[in-house]
Image (cartoon, rainbow, N blue to C red):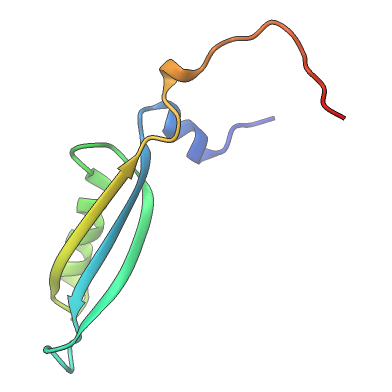
Length: 90
């Protein structure tokens, strides 16, 4: 069985990152729209999020207003322990 790419990222120190992005509507700048972005990223530098926000500012018309970030490490290498045994639940 091959581990998923997300699991491999978690073993490398990545954690689930969620960002709420508020941006102004291009046709109605007085209105704000919300976009939720979620990906595995490294705390505290957030290189994946920064790359996405760079893409946003270069390619999309809606100017950014506010970005709120939440990060949670779901699994860390230190949490893995080798167990000797097998347990079956019915």
